[in-house]
Length: 408
Image 1: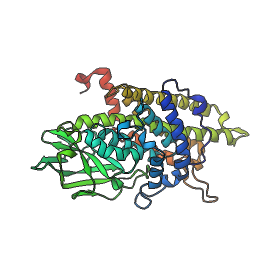
Image 2: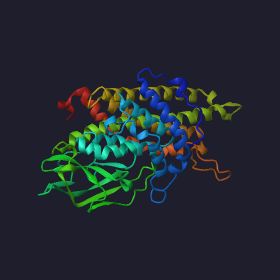
Image 3: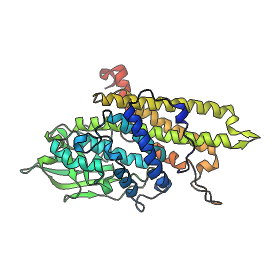
Image 4: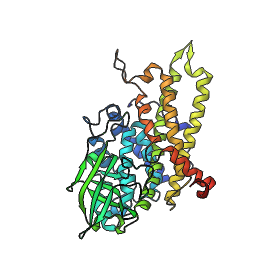
């Protein structure tokens, strides 16, 4: 993955939407990703969650370069950008170009855990968000449960926080919680009476147990695991925002930003697969001519180039609406998420086909040549599933078209 060909976006994509500061962030993160992420990308993509574990060296290097400060206000140690969502989305695309896993770690740490914390009290923001911005702690975000994922209604959520004389007692079970094996805290959605609330749970507290990391077909550097809470004692200072019953509002606002991030990651993977494919088809010869001389590949790559441009524009528009103060920038966020992640899967499949046997290989036995696109093929699929399945995104769009009275 480190031997990446020339970026076709440099000549095909003309960014007329992003503010100058976001374009500068993109250039800066691209340089960091080339230096820090690219050399480790193949090892991360082909590692085993339970033996290689969390890519701490990459995380720490990104922290040292200030990458985690991009999304946040200056009062908590962030960069204080005027358009932080736009800049953050661009950063995620640049990270995902080399490693979907690293982009996902960034997304969960900054967009999910960080955005949730940014809705907290000033004391909560100063205590926890400063550590997220400087990378001295790893953040996680927990809504999904074994029997609750897309449905986050109070009736579906089984994790419960009960009032006590000194605060709250938390009991429950969360699943697929990214970063949890190394997290210092987990922002957790729980039922409080008939409503939902979010709590900042210090993972060192008695009763917090993080399970064995899951083994996945892709995104192997993005560790996920079950988290169980058994009579975990929390104080009112751990209630996000200090107000009970705001959990669903906090979760949905956070996940909306998260979907923009996942869209950006989809574009990053699609662009990488596209660039590999263009270079290969231009160089590989069959029947006395470059494979790219076949009209099939010319037309297909022309379509994919158009779709990548569309996908990048969609996530940029959604991010800019978020920066303008729109809490739920729909339908752009849902459109961007489902369109970009579907495209990344389609483009990855096309890349495997274009490379033939080498596209399907992890490594060639004869000379150790690494498979150039198989990791993208494996990594891309999860984008259609997490942070709101693509079916849910289509439902969100349909509600904009037909109204809630019809769609529900």
